[in-house]
Amino acid sequence: MLLTQLLTPERVRVPLVATDKPGVMRELSEFLVRESGGTVADVLRAVEDREQVLSTGVGFGIAIPHGRSPSMPDLAAVAGRSAEPIAFDALDGQPVQIFFMLVGPERCAGQHVKALSRIARLARSDALRQQLLAAPSGTEFFQALADAESR
Image (cartoon, rainbow, N blue to C red):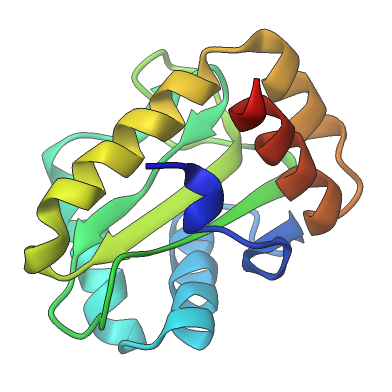
């Protein structure tokens, strides 16, 4: 599964408005629902419940809040970058600036895991992370991802 099958330039927000972890979770949840359906309360609850288990701040300044919500019609993703690093309880203790939110119904569990794996694999690239941090718009953020996936 390619990340660019789930994301479009319109599903990337640069910069995010929120300046703290709860705000980012809400902003991305509202953005995802507006773009893909579902209900904000269900999506936010799903990602917050998952966050209670273990932080989705995976390191390298990246977080992948995700969860399963029965209100979502299909697996959906949005992404964003904050203007400044945000404390996110990341596994490496570092603040986060790059966010990918992934939410879908239970029936999409296999696709969900593949998408998480794809994001984590791409996130290992220092060059890509630098491009995502430097991207002045959602379109350029998306293009950097598309270019990385085509290599």
